[in-house]
Structure formats: structure tokens, C-alpha cells
Image (tube, rainbow, N blue to C red; front, side, top):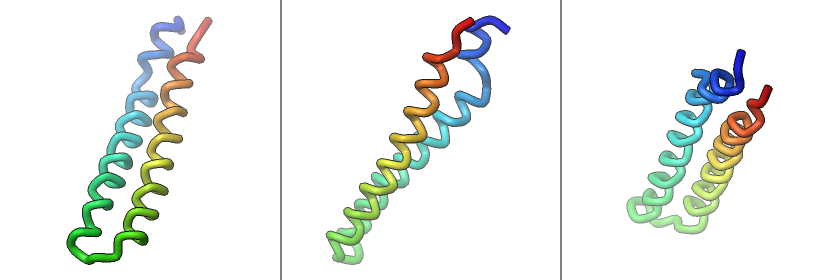
Length: 69
């Protein structure tokens, strides 16, 4: 399998898609503050969700960068 095929593998795109969805959930979770009014709690949970999404997306990006022969 060539490096181009490894970099374009479906599982890498699945990882990046899941990370993007997690990041979007984190962003929308931040807006729950306006509905329920507990700013610090929702902001903290939102930041944790966003960091998880960032870590997962970095895993996918480094998988693409590490796909060498």
C-alpha cells in the first residue's frame, strides 16, 4: 500500500468526521448557557468537549502525516 493510499484511507476520514462532530457539539453546548443560565458549568463542559475533539482531530492529522512508505 502506497503512502497516498494510507493517507486517503477511509478510517482517517471517519476519525476526522467524528472529531468535527464532537467539536460542533462542544460549540453548541456553550449556547446552553443562554437557555439555563449556569455560565461557568456549561462553559467548562464545553471547553472539555472541544479539547477532546481537538485531540481526536490531531490524531487523524498525524495519521495522515505519518503515512509514509
